[in-house]
Image 1 (spheres, one colour):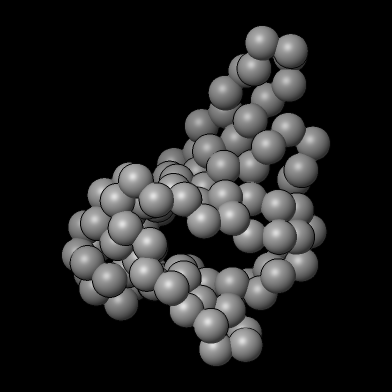
Image 2 (tube, helix red, strand yellow; image 1 turned 180 degrees about the horizontal axis):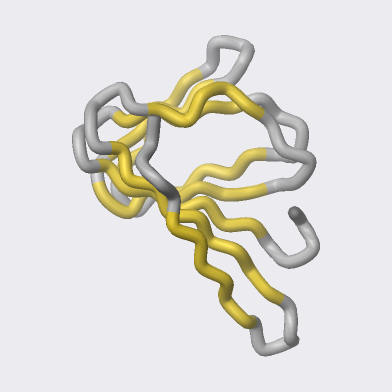
Length: 96
């Protein structure tokens, strides 16, 4: 499992707030298990790489600097492909 997430809020110029949740995966195979949300969010790999997977068996490798988005209601999970991988999930204002 990913270690304790850090949550940061960003005040946007229009007064809305954007939420960022940072996770660090200490070991290869650490993961956020299959789950879904009622809102869209994206996931950016800050360092290392992850395997993103869904309930249909689809999986892709996402590496440092790459971003993947998850539609509302879509089952998805994230698994570390490298020790020390860090990601940030971003939820846009009004989404969560």
